[in-house]
Image (tube, rainbow, N blue to C red):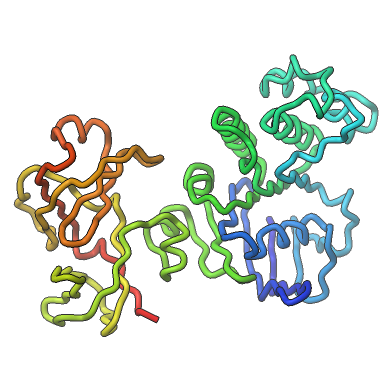
Length: 344
């Protein structure tokens, strides 16, 4: 549906470097990266706000360079919504409609709870309300591809939840969504596929599970919220074990065994128990609960086993095991759960 082939673009000293992507119709695709990584610049190139000289962007097999912006069928929604300040909400919604009306107007207004806002001016709206109106306007425009630039960055918690539901609903209706963010929680909640961007390059793409459980380097691991990241030295080849300071041996299951490595252990792959488990898991350690934190994924239990290890469990497990600060617990994980990356 959307093909980006060997796209290059330079502005000042910054370069988007050899961007290649294939995004399927109906996908929810998130560009995740730090500020200044080129995410917004890429959206602007797709939307047609900037002209590139090297590479190509094809939408439904049509070269976008050959189509004017208004004929591309693309809706671009910046983080402030970009509503027309001199038009009320209803007129903003109908701005892109040729005859001043739309058969889906009432349906969309009701679906997005905009009825009480129709006669208000943009200056009277909260950030969340502006974003909701902008999304509804984009939907009424008849666009087939929706580009969102940090849509949740300036809204409060309640509006954030509402807008996330709107974005999910938009995608479930079959619309293709590209979403730029620096927040891995947004990607984890909304995306089907993710591209990690860093310094103008895409350094990893994949589905949500691959990105958040199989990062291909240390930068991706940290950006995707993985907390159990450790420097390690190879201690033995049979069994395959790495030493983590101060004196922890971690068993791994991989063919690549660099002498100096970074070990990544996803918190969701660790099993917590009050007694040592009789299982095939090669790694098992006794530790002390240092802290218990509510997180987006559940309960984050911080355990001291010589190093601090994060374990993600459910509230039910926390209650059933009577876990509290200072309690001794066992944590266990498979050798195959440990991702081994060569240390730079």
